[in-house]
Image (cartoon, rainbow, N blue to C red; front, side, top):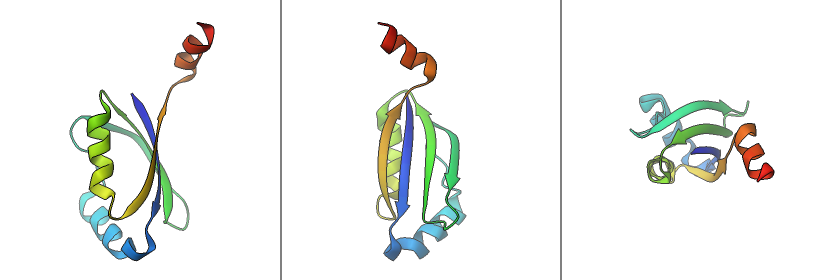
Length: 88
């Protein structure tokens, strides 16, 4: 399963979020593969594309950042997977 995680840094948590990111690299836990991460130029918003066999490790990763970020998690699929759905 692939997930697109849209995030916005909570303004009151900016200093702590930056410190945590610089210390940890924001790397995912075991069971999650980060396919890419992009930040807007303000550094307050961005998105991550990740993959996991289960929603549990992906949710665990989001939970680790919940005090610092507002997050929206969207399950996504490739063109090929969408074609399977649309083609019946």
